[in-house]
Length: 331
Image (tube, rainbow, N blue to C red; front, side, top):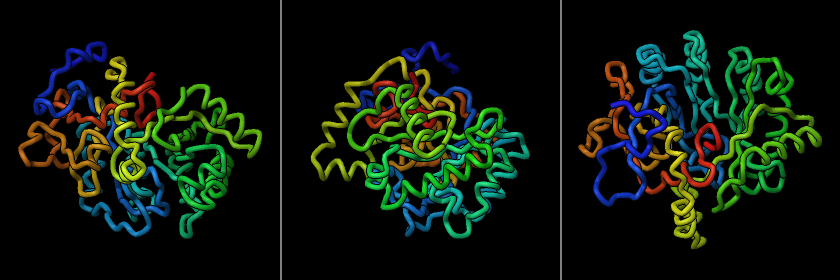
C-alpha cells in the first residue's frame, strides 16, 4: 500500500488499541538511512535523548558498517545521515563517508562543532569539505551563557571556533556547494519559536558578532524521553510538557514527518522508524510486536515502503506547532 502525502488521514497501520492517540502512519519511499554509529561523545548535553557522553563505549562493529554501502545501493537511498554521540569518533567514520560519497549519496554529518577542535581531529573540517559532506551543526542559541548552561562550560566558544573553521573552507558561503545548517533546541519544556524569524536573528547576530555565515537554521522540539524526560520529571514538568505537545498537534504535519521517508539504524544494526523510537526500544518492521527485530541486512532484500510505522505519544513532539524533524520545522 502506498499513500500519497495528501492523504495522511487515510493512512492505516496495526498498533495496539488504546496504546496512543497519535494517528496511525505507513512509510512511503525510503530516501534516507540515518545511522547512529556510536554513543561516545565529547559532550554530555542536558537535552540529549541518546544519553551520549565521554564514558559511553557503544560503537558499530566493522561488519555492520560494511553493510551500509551495500544497503545504500540495494535500496537506491539518496541520503546517509550519520549521527551519534559524535559520529566522527567512530574509527571507520571517514572510510564510510568516502564509500557513500563514491556512490553519489549525500552524506550528512550531525556535528556538535566542538569535535572539530578535539585532539586528533584537527583535519576533520578539511576532510568534510573535501568529501562535500553536508554539516548539520548543533548550536542551541547564539548566547554564550545559554549554550554553556545546556552543553557545558566553554562549549559556545569552541562552537564559534568550529564554525569559523568551516566558513574558512567555504561552508555556508554562497556558490561553494558546501552546506552548513545549524540546529536550535529550546532551553526547556516549550515549543520552538517560528523557524524563519529565528533563523534571521541567528544570521544577524552570528554575522555581526562573530563574522559567521550558514545556510539554514533547523528548529527542533525537545523530545520528552531519556535524559530530558528525567530532567522534566525531577522538576515536575513532564506531564505539562507532554500535554503541551498533544494539544499542539497539527494534522497537516503528518504528511511530512521524517519517519515517512527515513529508517534509523542503531549501533548494533537494528532498524527503527526514527531515532527517538530507537532510544525507546520500539523496533520497526512488518513483525513489530512479535519480539523479533529487523536488521540492516534485511534491507538488502526487503523494500520497507508501505510498512506500518510504530507510533506512540512522544510522536506528538514531531507534529506539535510548526512540526519538528531532523530537517527542522515542517510548516
